[in-house]
Each structure stands twice: as C-alpha cells, then as structure tokens.
Amino acid sequence: MNGNYVRIFDTTLRDGEQSPGATMTSTEKMEVARALARLGVDVIEAGFPAASPDDLEAVRRIAQEVGNPSDGNHIPIICGLARATRNDIEKAWEGVRHAARPRIHTFLATSEIHMKHKLNMTRQQVLDRVREMVTLARSLCEDVEFSPEDAGRSDPEFLYQVLDEAIRAGATTLNIPDTVGYTIPEEFGALIAGIRQNTPGIQHCTISVHCHNDLGLATANTLAGIRAGARQAEVTINGIGERAGNTALEEVVMALNTRRSIFNLETGVDPTQIVRLSKLVSNYTSIVVQPNKAIVGGNAFAHEAGIHQDGMLKNHMTYEIMRPEMVGASQTKLVLGKHSGRHALKMRLGSLGYALTDNEMGLVFERFKLLADKKKTITDADLEALVSSEVYQPPELFALDGLQVACGTMGMPTATVRLRDPQGQMHIQACVGTGPVDATYKAIDAVIQYPTSLQEFVVHAVTEGIDALGEVTVRIQGENPSPVFDAQKETEQQRTYGGYGADTDIIVASAKAYLSALNKILVASGQYGPVEETAILSVA
Ligand code: KIV
Ligand code: ZN
Image 1 (cartoon, protein in one colour):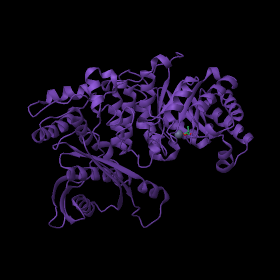
Image 2 (cartoon, rainbow, N blue to C red):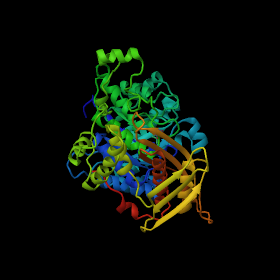
Image 3 (cartoon, rainbow, N blue to C red):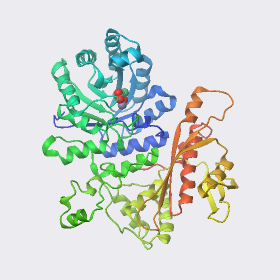
Image 4 (cartoon, protein in one colour):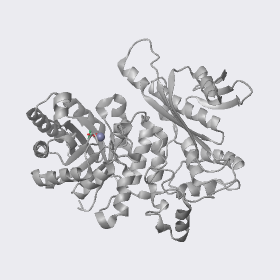
C-alpha cells in the first residue's frame, strides 16, 4: 500500500453503538454501512457478533450486501470484533466470511490493571492466549487485526512482546488502543514510535490507532500516532462511543486534508458527504451533535461577531480554514418554494447526495408540498429534516393519524391522539398532562401500553424564523413488562432507544419522535420482528 495513505477504519457500528442509547435497528445499521461505503472508508467494523444473535445477523447482512457491492464500486473490508476466545472468533468469522474482504479483529488486555483485576491472567498466560487465538483467527481469515486493549496504560516492553507474538501468529494489522483516553499526544506518539522501533516484523504490518476521548485528546492523540507512523485510524462518525466517545472521523479526515502540507497524507474519504452522514448517525442514534462540535456542529461555520462577519465579507479566508461545502454543510438559503415541482426537488436532493427511490421521493414530495404551504423559503436543512423524518425511520408499526391538543394558561393541557396499529385499525385516546407534550405522550401510552421511561427530550429549530421546522429527538428506555425474569430479554428491553421527528408544529414533531422510538422498542421486543424487513424503505 502507498506509504502516504491512511486507512480509515470506521467503528460507528461497533464502538459507536456502545454509547448509551445509541442502539440502532439492523435496518438502520445497514443504511449506515451503505453510507459509510459511499463515504469511502476502508474498513467498516460492523459489530461484535458474539454479543447477541441480532449483532451476528447484522454483521452477516452487512458483509453480504455492503461487503459485496453489485455496482463494482469501492469494496470496503468488513470487520467483526471478537474477544480472544474460540467462541468469539468463530462467531466473528461466521459474521464476516461472506464479505469479499473479511477481517477478524480480536483483542486482549495487556495493562497490569486489566490483567490482574479483569482477566486474572499472568503475562505469560496473556502471551500464550494471544498466540493461540491469533493463530486460530488466521486459520479462518487472511486478514487479522489484533488489539492489546488498554495499550495506553501498558508497559511498552511487554507490549512489544505481545505484538511480536501476534505478528508471528499471523496478525496483519496491529491496533494500539488508548482504551480509557488516558494518554497525551507526545506520549501516544512516542508509544507508536517505540512500537515501530522495537517490535520485530512490524514493518510488514499496518499499525493502527484507536483513541478514546476521556480527556478530549482523542483526535490529537490519533494525529500524533499517525505522525509517528500509524497508517490506520479507528474512528466514529460524530465521535460517538463509550463514555466520552471515540476519535471523530470528520476531525481526522479534515485535519489531514486541511493541514496537508504538514502531514502529506491522504485518505479515501469523500469529505463532501461528512455532514450528511453525521445527520444520519445523529438521527438513528438520537445523539444530538453539540452546536460547537468541530466540522459537523450547527455553529461550525457560523460567524456571529460583527468583526468576523466583516472580515468574512471581505475575504472568507480571514476566519474560515475550510469551506462549508467541502464537508457538505449546506450554505444555500433559498432553495425551493411552493411552486417547485417534483423534478426540482429530486435534483436538489440529488445534489445533496440523496438517491431516493420513487416511493421515498413520493413521501418526501408530499411533505415538501405541505411544508411549502406553511413556510415561504425551504432550505437544504429543511429538506434534510424531511428526508430524516420521512425516509430514515424505523418500521411504522404504530403511525400517527391525527393529533389535537388544547393547552395554555386557562385549563388542563389535553391531547387526543388517533393512532393506526400494525393491523390498520384506528385507536383514539385522550389524556390530560402537565403540558401538551406530556398529555400527548400519555395518550400514546394509553394506546400502545408498553412500559417505558422518557430519558431525554430535545427540541430545536432546523432554521431561523418563526415558521421554522422543529426537530425533536427523544430517548426512551424500556421497562421489562414480563412477569417472568429473562436476562436476555431484560437487557434488550431495558436498552435505550432514540426517536426523531420533524414538523412545523413541535407537538406533532414530539409525537412523531416518541412513536419512532416506541416503534424501535417494539421491534426489538420481538413482537413484530418480520415487519422490519418489509416495512422500512431502503435508501439506494
Ligand atoms: O477501546 C478499545 O480498547 C477497544 C478495543 C476493542 C479495540 O475498543
Ligand atoms: Zn474502543
């Protein structure tokens, strides 16, 4: 491989999905995997197949469909994670084996604290296990990645020994994780340089870096690792992941692009798709991107201070180190209006990177016309919200057919909802609440009768102006309704699920977001399994 090329290994679907509440349905995972392949990432870590039968199935589908593109375009490596155990490695292989380019990624902790308190293993036992398990993985798959977990806090001398074992057993990529986000850039860079110097055979392998953001240093550490010779970066979209998250893909890619003269390195990522993917992942995981988040935050390209605005008008380079269009951040204000036709809408969505089927276009066009009646100017951001709320949705088991609320200072906030159930039957319920959203959610609960608790409710306007579309994101957690204890079911049902809705009426948007999260939880509960395959619309 070209020595100036940095492989982008995306782990949004594995480490990212480990963020609290980031659970995605298997259809959502497929959509994210397809979008990642279009973005041009080199490796997609599709999941942790031994974690559950659902995880295995999701990895298998991604391997089969995204790992074998029919259009002959870029073929990403599809990777499955495995602890260093026979069962995990065999499950990972089962998951990825049908990909054109499969990879098994196995890991074992090497820091004293993990070996002593978590694994209860000696150094020698760790060395033996690494040899045995990498050998097993390599007997199944030609492409094997090994990670010494908590490498950032491991004794470097021991690390060289472990990596030596892994290389001799057939590992082709050695990933160095700063699992708990403990290191600082100089230290992490020196760790990678030390590994390059002291590990026999390392020159035949790719060194990878995998950093967590506990001290806010994940991107800086990743870049330090790359400067020290790593040629694979493990990242997630929006930096989602365990605790404070992982290194953000968009930050690494744009740092390498923007400071090319320093790094002199390239990636295969098409940066113009970054913002779209960021929104897709945010909608599916219901993890809202903070406004000041680098590259993809709502304010990343906003200029508020008069002095800055003045400078921007004279020359945008005064305050802008990259142009918003380079990452696909919408700039255009007036896009379409009431008189725009289906063709114009399709063209505009196409230029934003959406390839919708006729069915999906029909749904978006219908919403677009309704919106154009209420709102004079429709921007790219509005269109993206419409696509998210109409197309990127879980199967609609229960659908909102009507909603009416009465609220204000004079009485009791009351909501009446009409829902269509999976059999097409209508249900009407009215409830009183502390406010219109509470009343609406109570009325929905009265129809669906699935016990959940609301963990988070966020509302914000897509664009400026009183007629703006409101976006609502909710997160709910299931409460095990079964009187019989079932550990597997309990975990499934108690996971957190997110939902997204957009409408000019924020109570309607709130109802849609809540229903979207409830629909996900109902699918996960297994009561409506097959519906997912048929009901969701797929994005080309
Ligand atoms: O953070 C970590 O150590 C990991 C490993 C499994 C690579 O995610
Ligand atoms: Zn990790």
